[in-house]
Length: 253
Picture 1 (cartoon, rainbow, N blue to C red):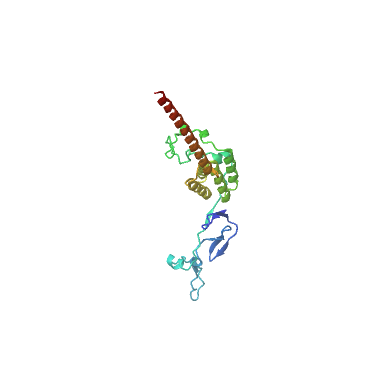
Picture 2: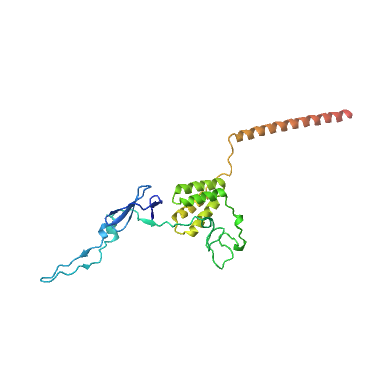
């Protein structure tokens, strides 16, 4: 069992905890922030035992409805700690079909929800009967990295390395598709949702298509200078030839 820390948004194993004022407090092992669940001590249920009548046996305790003060009264004194959100990890299979193939009910290309009576995807426009899996190839490098990532899914640093690899290979769109496949199979997977959003964020960044090596402007400047010099010499030679030709024509007359 794991819980999601509201401070750093990581999935942390629920290993140790403590109780304070009738509530459960768990400390994140990554950032040290506390997450709390349960009411403060002032809201704990109370039972009252009425006094025994004179000369009679004591009456059995009767439950009394818990007295819960208004939210404005106890919120001022109770510590405002984040609510504890427990996330149960699903043991998703690590087979290639589960990792790389969209489940039934979604578009095989963009993994958007698919209606049974629809013939094409309203999101990407794919005509389902025309889908060819080989038109969207996945490199062996990215596929192997995704298999390794699935084995250590809660390690966000591993997700970051995979996205960096996908950007360097020009396969960021394919990485986003893999995250959507994971979400289609496990809709409550907070890590997959975060990974999908991070892929979208990185895709919106302006990344230059190529980087000029050092010294390139100097090379271009020198080539331009040489070209101008050669052109000037050619023009000069042509001018001399034309001048001589004109002199020859003038002498003939």
